[in-house]
Length: 489
Image 1 (cartoon, rainbow, N blue to C red):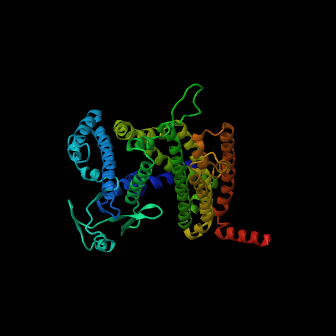
Image 2 (image 1 turned 90 degrees about the horizontal axis):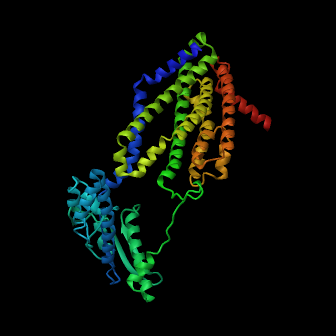
């Protein structure tokens, strides 16, 4: 076993002792952070969009749209100020900021003063613009043809930010069948937030008018429109007589399990691919012949598997350590800004999920690692490997496709069947864990996966022997497939 240890150490150090390894180690949390903040950055960096509403009905619907958007925007800004102030100075700071903001009960003119009271002011303009960052202005013209130069940017309107093009124009007209028609005119064909906001405002107005025509007064209409049932979600798994409402903390394990399944898939694929490429490089550089002269084939196979496994363990250990450190040091700040996020981070470090993830990763890695290592022993170039990798990649992708399309039905028959496919079990069963599958099913599927892993290791060792000794190669697989096709014919 000393030879296997030396080979494992060599494989491990060949990755860990390089700059590329540490760059990739840092790249994952960096890109994860970028992926998490990119939507917010895109939302916050988009410019303020100016639009006009032209009411052709004479019902002052342009003023209705403006007032409704002011009320909605005020509620959004007030909630944002409360959350930001709590994150900076707790409940006392939030009360102080809201008291200043409420000095203008009908608008958002006190936004900057409220933020300045807690040491924040840079976000004032973005908050005042609202979620869609759209501001209604007087129309520079009243017809579509006259507005087109303003919409295309050939002409501009005066704004607090200086001359700006008009983003969109809404024409509200009477319609014979529907009562009202909203025509949206803009050069932006993809943005739907602003269009949806105006549509909802006009729809609410039409419903209110329909109820008024039936003899109801505005107060009665508001009371009717506010009627809705109180929906309470209870966990049926709670003890008898105990009614526990389902919270985000109860749902967090499902999101975490799905995330771990994807991480598991990426980890298995990446480390197995390391084995494939390193094996091809060693065959091309005649290193494998040197190893064969000093160690048994079994030792080489075991050493390579253990060495790359050590690399993945190092990755997980560093990422896990950083995660524990951040959640420990920044737990209070995270809880103040977003309690749900803290619950999600806490669920990540659930011992049951972590132990299950470790077990499934070990089995999945050994299965796919042995397969990729055997494939590498048959290939002399990466081009040869690509012809053999196709079917394996499809096998790897199928369980993730099943999980993606079954996120809302993790107890479906397709998911249950997928749990019994040994090559898919590590990923599918990981995603199913929060649904509490029967213990017998969990143990049986895992036992089948372990047996399959042992069979794959035995078969991979046989293929590895033939490939390492150059008694077989990628052409041998092609010939075997052709022979099978002829016999079938």
